[in-house]
Length: 106
Image (cartoon, rainbow, N blue to C red; front, top):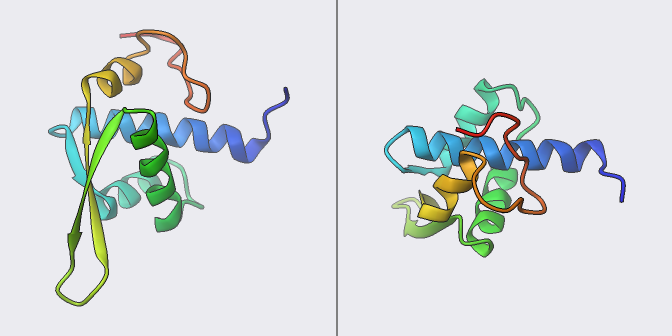
């Protein structure tokens, strides 16, 4: 099956999110992750993209998510990487469909 460019970007962005979490204390909020994705070369990333990626990563048991109410309304997502997420971020274990794989496992 052929991967579209949009799907390729999403796979790479999900791997980047895992690496960001792993390398920065194992957790972060969606705002920090959004800013980091923009800085890492994913210039079209929206907050909704980050939220969708976090939900996708949660479904695959690579992160956990805690939602907190903001004083002004709405919620903010705080994600924490799991042991499986750390392995995936390092290119260990079986490949996961929908997640880019490091060419250079750590």
